[in-house]
Image (cartoon, each protein chain N blue to C red):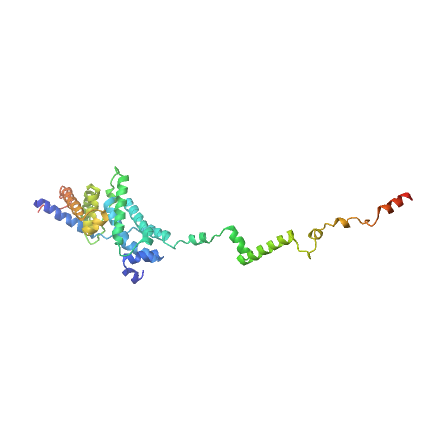
Length: 193
Length: 124
């Protein structure tokens, strides 16, 4: 990928793709794919489901490219919105199914000791397990706010709700997460001091 | 209250750790996404031009005969031939004769005999 394409905006890359530039697809995939996959992974909790959501969301992006009007919206916002809706659809279809916590990847961090590595892995597993206990919309809002670090207005656009509703969802979600994790403090290696 | 604050702080630490995780697409997923992109890319489908280049049989036949100018000449010659066949000009030979049929006036080689001569021969 050349330097010019790497510096181009998502908007410009999408237009390039629609005009037949295959390198633009590679750059957009490298930029946006991991973000969508990360969110889908946190929201779905199952690797295979997250992969399906990511591929489908990106496919819809490719198909939408010829109609994209640059400057009207952010490509990433549009993509997050599609991905979140796909997650909701899949959750509805699979309601009653199990949550595969083992599918959550552990963070590779060779600079830490084995014990610390295991403890970090256990904490992230605990975070994911607590996230999966939240209602769907709360989980989405918390993931977009605290893991993707998106602004409340952007999340409001993605979830098609008001900014106040986003604030309410994230606040309630965060309290519920803290309560869920409080019972596992000792298990997760948090001291009482 | 202090317990809640501590839990929220720990939660913030967990969020920060989660954000610091390196994020990358699995190779097979990246390949699948790029394959989709190539498949639906406008103007990027190699099979489409081949399908679009296929022409109906009548057009292929017209092109084999030399295109529209040749077809026009062929149609004019056919119409002229039909017209001449139906209503031949006076200076043209009789088409029936050309086709091998003879006029009834020439069908009898002994047309020069008359009835009196025939009768006289019978009497002799």
